[in-house]
Structure formats: structure tokens, C-alpha cells
Amino acid sequence: MPFALNFVHPLLMWVLLGLMLYSGYLGYKASLIRKVSAEERKAMVPLHYGQRHAQLGAVILGLTLLGAVGGMAVIFLKNGKLILGPHLFVGLAVAVLVIATASLGPSLQNGKEWVRSLHVCINGGALLLFGWQAFTGIAIVQKLLSSAASPTSLGT
Image (cartoon, rainbow, N blue to C red; front, side, top):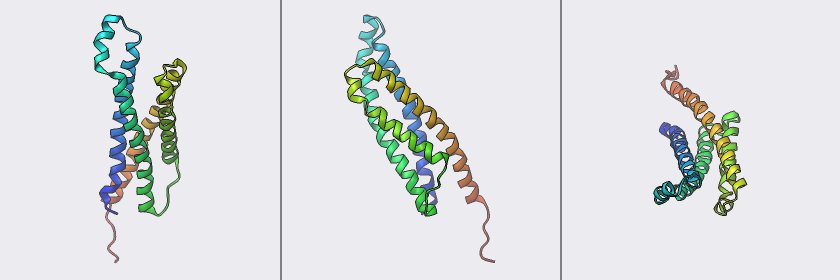
């Protein structure tokens, strides 16, 4: 397996973290539209915050699933087994939370306020866990780099 393949998952996940943060910003701006004056609303509506937030949510769902499966596949190809540990389990929990929040889409479109609150709570939890994932992933990447840089014996 090419060594560079080890870094596709971490790079994808850092891009995904940025997309999640941006999506949260868009969702926040979309929620403000319901709370501002008519004049401010008139200026904000053409920016399509809610529509952009929903479209980005679909991208986030796809990249989360691709990243989770891809990360497990690379580990399996490299080691012949999955490495069971907190990074894997929290990553799977994040994937489940992203799927759960995506499933709320139809109810969000109907304007149910309790669903909006649930959506925000689930995404907040997913973002916290995913942030933890990012930092534990740095440690894993550092181990990969240090193992690649260490000299190996040439069979002497």
C-alpha cells in the first residue's frame, strides 16, 4: 500500500471539520433570519443561508461516511485488522450522529421548533466529538511519520 494513502483520511477529515464549522455558521445565519427585523430579513434572504446550509449538509453526510469507511479500509489494508480503540469508536459515533441529524431534514423543512433544537444539539455533540477526533488523529499521524522516519535494519 502506498505510504501517501495513509494521509488521505486525515486530510479529508480536516477538510470535513472546516466544512462542519462553516455549515454551522450558515445554519446560525439562517436561524437569525427568523429573528431580525423585516428590513434586515430583506437583505439576508437573497443570501440563501438556509439553502446553502442544507446543501452543505448533504456533502457533509457523504464525506463523513466516505471518511469513516475509507479510514477503516486503510487501517485494515495496512494491518490486516481494524485497530479497536477510542478513535475508531468515537469516529463511528460521529458518523451515526451525522446520519441522525441528516434524517431530521424533512421535519426541519416543516418548521418544527423542537426538531431545530434537537438538530442543533446533535450537531453540537457531533462537532465536539469530531474536534476530539481531529486531535487524536494528529497523534496517529505523528506516529505514522515517526515510524516512516526511523531507520530499519536491512536484514543484517
